[in-house]
Image (cartoon, rainbow, N blue to C red; front, side, top):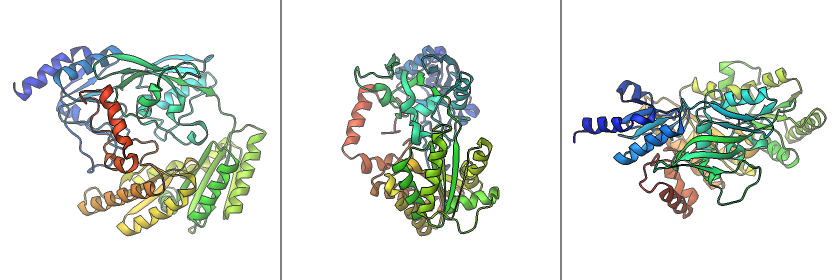
Length: 459
């Protein structure tokens, strides 16, 4: 059978899977996610399907299984690790049209959604009921809940409210053989059986495709107070972080280094002095009485650690202005070239060592690296900036990236805090997981014996 005939037969068998597309120009747009270009392979799919129901996802998976071809699930394609990159001859299952909020139960504080619902859209729907969906990745305006579940996405609020796994109650999953099963518990407590919902969350589509999820909502956030503090050394900023997390549970604790701040200043001058080595942003949403006390304590701890300047506001608009540099961090670095965004996490006391080590790596490999991220939980995003058209710069960028991952591991950290392993970091998993990696592969084999669900990713 010729390749054309084989593709045509697969396309025919996909007839019950919703819209089926084999047009090469359309397939090109679905080959890869937003991971840095030139570093990760991306194959050519045999077909793209865009289902709207669980039954159509099942049909797609069954057709792919019958032909022995891989299945690559895809949300908005906003991932940064190659987790949604296609393989040659695969079926890409795009969940973008499964974008319905099935139920918003205000009394039960839950929302049941399809995987294509955009994070911010769920937030808006929850807010209309006086509720709040806490996981808030920087991509919340365009990333989908299914993608958030795939990578166990976090965000600025996760230091206090947790990551996607903490909000996930149940999910419906289409397995490699086409069965649809529901895992987890709608109840706030539940220990019957293993925590399969927790296992699915962060598995990057390698165990199955999430087609529906029930998520935990919270009461609307109280009015917040905001702090920004500048430091003349990374060590002092790290000491402030350590002091704060020992005394307070902030709803945000973010850090920018000098390289990132300089890029921000070039994009939008915000008045920072040239000698600032780090900026710390903190927020308290503990309420109208406790909030001001918490933010005052955090300011006191920053000043005691050596802050050169600290400002506080309980006005929401002023709070947004104070933290503008954090929101501009990644866009500012993107303006300077191609970005290879890292996502390492280390124990909190090791944050200063990570930051200092990243600065040394930038000098050693002669690349620009701007570091920002979630200092309150040790999850930082050193971002290597380079020209992807220059082979030597690509080589140095990748070497610097690998050195950062190795540094994080040497400090007792992890290769990925919230962006996923994808294709980008599989080579580093043995160093972190050791013999436990075989346990993960055994789970993968049990769920997906033929190895067709997003193969080569995550584990």
